[in-house]
Length: 261
Image 1 (cartoon, helix red, strand yellow):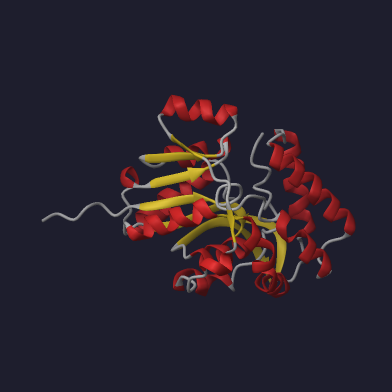
Image 2 (image 1 turned 135 degrees about the horizontal axis):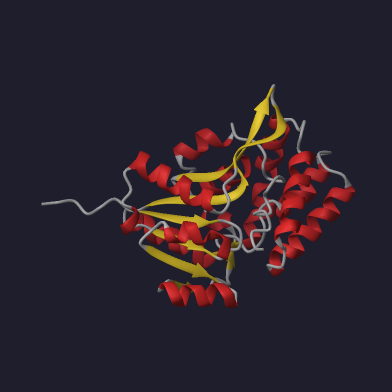
């Protein structure tokens, strides 16, 4: 008897699994830890405001990307990892969508792997994904030399690069993309949604909803936050092992980089 194709569920992070920007959520801990200035916090708040409105244009997105990349240059990787580990539950717990957690559990019950896909830094995305019980994560990876960020980017998980990352991990893990699923709130994730056979948009704006109707994609509404501690699962071994090694892109490009144009 033939086995069904191996499928995966690919979840965007910001405004899909959590109700905010993952990097913006950590601006205060980074300030308290001496990594960023008060001016950086204000810039982060403005970037977060544009992100939540979906009103950042291409120039604003690029300027913020360049600013964040320059800002983290020289940051100590171990310090960033420690701050994320110590404040993860405090700043992420209150903003996780209950519907997303339930959907992740549903896919696991069906035997599907769950992969979190985010433009935020791997050092931030991987610990969150591990707590959620995800099997893998695709995230932005910053260049590190002598234990510090150089400001360069090895892999920017944004736009078409998300789809490229999905195809790469599908080849490695043996996923049938036509049988797989993808979930995102952002029109910039169109390549990611197009990479699988079963696509869903979450809390879409008018433009994304119209695109979903044109493409025949499902439309979901997430609105109920749940505290992760109440749904805590043992960290996924693959992610738990890697989470401590990655570092920040959290402030870098973490705003998804304001994913919307």
